[in-house]
Image (tube, rainbow, N blue to C red; front, side, top):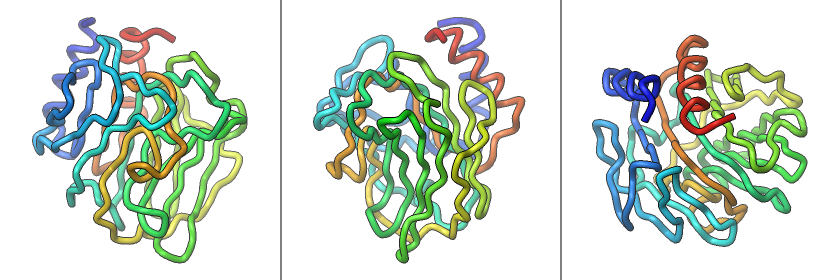
Amino acid sequence: MLATERRWRRQLLRDPYLVLDLPFYELDGTKFMSRDTYGHLCTNKGTKWTPNGRVFDGVDDRITVANHTSFAFTTEKFTIEMGFTITDLSGARSPYGKGGGSNGYWSAVRTNGSFWFSTNEGSGAQESKSATGEIIVNTPYYFVVEKDGAAISMFKNGNKLTLATVATHKDIGANTGVLSIGDLFDGGGQFFAGTFRLFRIRKRLMTPVEIQQNNIGYLKEFGG
């Protein structure tokens, strides 16, 4: 592991707002605990571990994290960090989903390479979308989504994106469903195809400097 990545890991340990930390390249086994202070129980459902991360087959693979109040957001500001490479966009691919179809938050990469982030509070989803072609297959990405009240921001490889669709996001509906990484809502479809290297949630917004530093550490480690 590079020195840049080691410094990154030390900084994470000092962040009290880091509520979920999953460096998949370090997490083998059918069940494992997250690397944050909560130690969330995670269950592997089909993915294969490699030193480069967890490989998802795009058919039914996923990893579930038991529900916890630390990331069952309703009104809070939060950031989701991801490191992944998608290998197939013949259908929509969901990196994660929390809650259910009527309450919660989730994302999807569409066949045209647009990254969508969605929230729901019971009356229908609000969806913010990147431009088409932002995500292409077989390319490593460090991708960040932030929710700050009604506003959504997205960052790809350290750069803030200009969104093609900007929704006004309401407070998220209360939910107790698991967090499913690799599909919508633990068997809900849109299964992710490719390699997931890391997944993190912070109960705060990240600074532009933090995003840039983490992007440099990630891309030095995994290419791009």
